[in-house]
Length: 307
Ligand code: SF4
Image 1 (cartoon, rainbow, N blue to C red):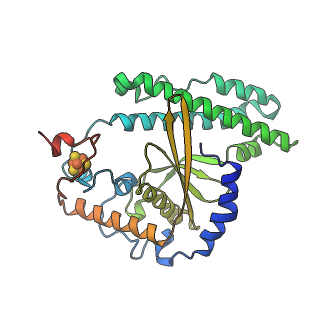
Image 2 (cartoon, rainbow, N blue to C red):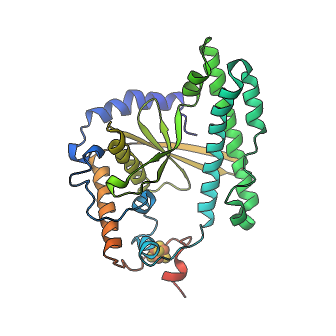
């Protein structure tokens, strides 16, 4: 799901990348300028990126209830499903890398057999006991993702082997699966958690990829720019592009759509404003009040709408 099609690659390489390089980002909005305003955090509070970038609650009251009032809730069904699907995808890609090293180029056909024989769902997965009656549906969809991704990886490995007669294992991994999964990043110098985990980073160009199962929302771009800023603060190179991957199910089909975004000044400022506002709310223990249009799946409906 993280791999670009030929058309998408052209769009990124010939269109978006040159455009993003021409578009100059204000120096003070680059992550490496974290010790100075406006990036310098104003409060000692540290927030997870999903707490800054998530705007499912119109007032951010979910953050107040969790961080100030200490109220925790079990994950909702969409949260569990999303976690399970992410886990499935990571499982396929990490195993594919491992099998390439283990089996080697000469026994490449065994890589495909091993991948197909790997169960889509880890029987010990943390979310299984929580899933209840949703378990069969989540498992069936995880199997669809597994099937889809195994076929994609196998095709990419075959393609690399066909084009590179003398390729060795390490290079095959880098060419066929050019992503780092769940990259751990320390966002503490930007007022974010020190245990951030980006879904994927592409190696061909510094690009953050965020995978979503559900409907597109405008604020999903905040997560991309958040990871981009953190990468700039940690590695001190510019990150100009992000990609949102939306995966949805149509009966037994998986439909995948990608949205590319330039991490421009406007997005960076929006993220900083959200961070500052939410930090202030937590630091000053200020209740933002109940929202006027609460999603029906919110974990805190029993608190905000007790009737
Ligand atoms: S019920 Fe409404 S106000 Fe309360 S946390 Fe959920 S979305 Fe926010």
